[in-house]
Structure formats: C-alpha cells, structure tokens
Length: 97
Image (cartoon, rainbow, N blue to C red; front, side, top):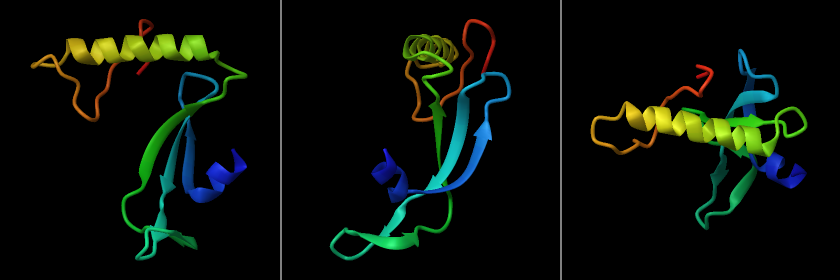
C-alpha cells in the first residue's frame, strides 16, 4: 500500500458529509519520461483525478458494495438510454448521494 501511495501525489482529501469512513481524494499522476517511466517527484499539472475511498474498519466491504449497487441502479433508472455514462450520480436506498 505504501508503494502505491508514493506513486501518486494526493492534493486534497474530503470526508463524505454523511458517511463516516468514506472520503474523496483528489490526486495527480506522475509525469512520464519518453520511455513511459515515472519521473520521481514530478507530477502532471492541470486537472486532478478524483477517487472515492472507504475505511473497511468503519464500513464493511459488503455494506459499501451494497450501497454502490443501489447508487448505480438509481443512476441507471434515471438514464434515458438505459446505459450508464462514464461519470454518473445516484443515491442509495437512504437517499445518500
């Protein structure tokens, strides 16, 4: 896990407003040299990438996966063509976004 974390530069961490143990991280990818090898300590500028993560000590894998399925199904039900786009938003059974 440490090696994985050192590969990225975390720009910001934001806790979820209502779900304890869930947070959003914004991160930058490393710059690559011509061979495609990461350049140590140098990161891509511009738009950051975003990922939602959770602490399995606070919310179980099963509960997190169940909420994810509920959110995906909610987003799919709002889709006009029956297909989820690359980025989508939905709510779980309790109305949590």
